[in-house]
Image (cartoon, rainbow, N blue to C red; front, side, top):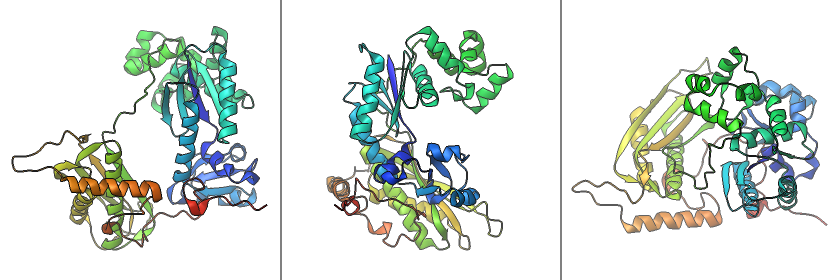
Length: 418
């Protein structure tokens, strides 16, 4: 048996942790640059606020119904997520962290599944303060269905266990076809054209027909819905094949200097992620773009890729070649809205391919990078950085409604007056 533990309205729940007055108040969390709604509390959903809607389009509704909005605080959300996942590891030796707010647990050998699932819900709420729902079933896809069914019909209980054919059919019939894990918008439209409207309808389809229409991926989903496990728990995260770091700017950039600072920071972030997964990259791609929605300003978008002589995860090296790429595509006279860096050609760091006259990065450089990472880990991001990353950060994204980083920054520690 497999359990899926999913945090309820995770970003909104994180904001409520340290501000209990927000309980039962409508809350929305906005994307980078305070652009679009990326998370909603149940109260905000009941007001008709849609996921992904631009914030400026619902300004009147926010003011009228006193909706509380926050800028995305991914530092806080990431730390709370780590605490939730560590708590879940107490309930199973095998935990697959599927996303920032979801995890699959191996429930093999557990006798009273419902009581055990309830204890998970209670413990996470008591230890962390975040509400969760738990779905339990024979396969990962069915566990997803069970979790969704629990949220939709038994949110107060927060648990649904598919341990009988009756319960499986009940949950499948209540799940729209587009809500099935692994079936996207394109396939759901195709399936509805064949009068397959629910997960149950899909589960009754012919295996050969599904394979013909949706390839082996659809066939796997069909089998999973019928209780045949095809997806195992992925306990070790695979290294990423490419890493991208990009941001929209809080205000348009019209000169090279702040743009180079932004690119340097993106390159340094990519280098850190490479070191974290013990990999190196062989190619650096840089892209810049103006605001395509602005009718008054000139439009320009461009990107270019440079090859590193030797694969690297050194921040100095990646920044150097990222700036080389930026100089190739930068043009004066435009208002730049977004820029980013992507690295690819990623291999393990012990697989460096050298030329005849090349020499690997020296040990001193590696020590510098490790020292920088250690200092930033213990004292906070960007405590120590390279000069090319700048200090003014006038290009940084807008986050006017950012909450404190209560759990990761000493100056943001919650103060309680007695």
